[in-house]
Length: 504
Image (tube, rainbow, N blue to C red; front, side, top):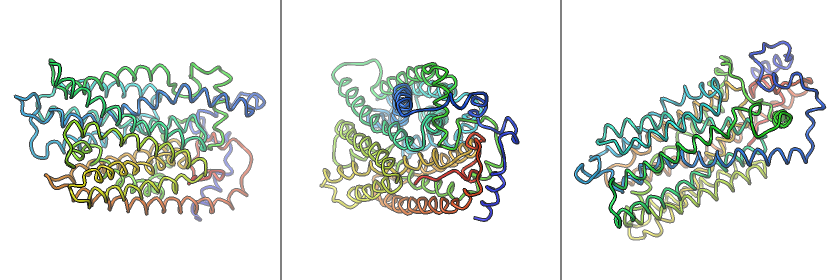
């Protein structure tokens, strides 16, 4: 703690006038000539602002994040809709582990894109860069029907992953830019829950396409239709995203000039600001050497190993319980409903009781029970194993909570984007490993691996909570040295700013 104390003490004596214009947050530049009396926000005004932000931002964030999940999981629906069939049957003739590699290569693309995209999110206008990627990955998905072999599909999945790597860190930045720390957990939980909506929609869409093509003759195979429908939807909503979502408060067309300033002032309590496009080496180094960063990385690695397997194999897995292909498509949908309810409830209760980690960690305990049902119940008890699949959907809750902690507990724009990049790299590695745990017809090794991963994740969540509380105790003495000033607009890291408090 002495090293941190020295660092913070040095920063305490820094004033806004002493730093260069490039070092301060965008908010400081916008508000520097505004009278303090013009920035007073009463409760009624604050309530109106949050409603306006929610009304304009949340619907499109939710829809696009749902499409992000739907588009990468279209492969699992296509796998039992004819994708793997020989060329004569209209498929691309997959053999052996080729499907597993189609699942994994998405995350190789994600891995390649993760680090540069977090830098580009900082450098380019935020919403415009995100909109470009959304429209581009929708276009890539539309190209899948043109793939005639494994290699063609492999290349498309790689680029799909590379383009989708922008959405989670980008949406996390948007949330931290517009919402206070007490609001972020609920909002991140809300847009992340649309993974569940997408799972329901995708299952019903695939089921409808599969059944209708048996009744009515179509010019192209059903697996190609689902790629086209999902891709075109994404392109359309990418254009809507570009129109609605601003790069920051200063260019929100649905806000008056005064309300733009008030929306910036409203998040002053975050001690983070709204953005800085200049790369700061010391912040990147702090991110790399921060134990909290590595605790996040460990969680992403072990949590995403089961996620990578279940995301790409949930339809074949349900089918392996003894259900038909059509039943597997249909029965996968309720898993999305479980995810919606638990993610939203976890985010809300975590913010309500100021305890995101403990609330969300119960999802891991439920998931351990669920995966144990799948692994240990006899094969003839297919209803019990299906129930285990539904219980397993709660495992995502702590991932969402930790994603919200990157938003609320990491300050400094360069540090935040660096931590997000490291988190996403671990996310990719876990998702690459996950599908490879499914070998041949015996899926027991994958099931046992996933149980072990959940146990490690549970311990890691408890460590993160303990460490954040320890950091807060260490800052109690430092706040006595603090002085007045707009330190929250100086783009300081969470370690540098003595007023910063870690959420748990």
